[in-house]
Image (cartoon, rainbow, N blue to C red; front, top):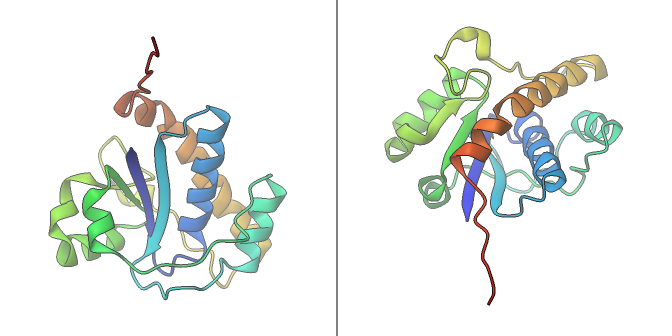
Length: 162
């Protein structure tokens, strides 16, 4: 099974929203063969997503209400096929502490192209609902933009029963 992990700072806003969006889109495409999860570079295990992250997702028919934050798990990162981060600082953190994942870590806002600061997805934490909506819209846009690349990278295998 292929694996995609989203990384942000606390795993309570951006990465849970991204995880929820991609899971929702893959479900619509009947792609149950791609595992999607999220973690935080400074995540504390067991925290819920923020209320505003839950609300903005719910408004878009995506349920992240059962999300529990997780810190980085090296073995899981190493087994993943793609790791998407929200900011260059997350990528730098991973490269320092988990150098084995260097070649599968990308800035979501730029992948599969050249990375630049324009690809940063800003942290909505501490902001009002409209700031969370902007973060959600940015995540939604970039996930929809990369879905064709993900599907090409992980073609669905069909098993025939005789």
